[in-house]
Length: 125
Image 1 (cartoon, rainbow, N blue to C red):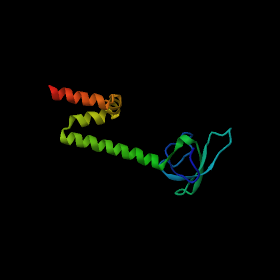
Image 2 (cartoon, helix red, strand yellow; image 1 turned 180 degrees about the vertical axis):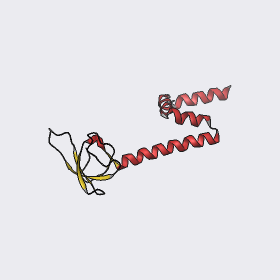
Image 3 (cartoon, rainbow, N blue to C red; image 1 turned 90 degrees about the vertical axis):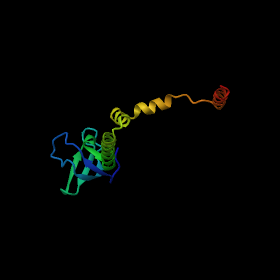
Image 4 (tube, rainbow, N blue to C red; image 1 turned 135 degrees about the vertical axis):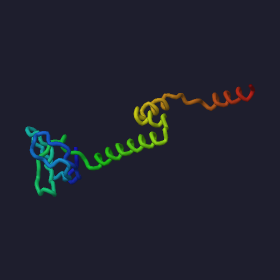
């Protein structure tokens, strides 16, 4: 649940109330009526109006900015991989980094004694 006074952005108009999509606003009240579908009362300063909106139609400004940053970072990595003909980086970006993280977490951590034993064995050979 969003806090009062938080800066939000209207991202949808699910009930076709002519909400100003893409405009900034502020949460000014909660609608606690159980029989009502609307969650918040939002003040949009640009149009100088209050709107009743459901929770699905609003998103925090910080979340939208982070999503845009992630998208731009991914596009920049793809462009860099193509420019440098780095196939490994390109595949990793296109397939997602989750496979690499999972592979790293599944590796067994070698104990200190096993490592020393392995080094001594290779030194003996």
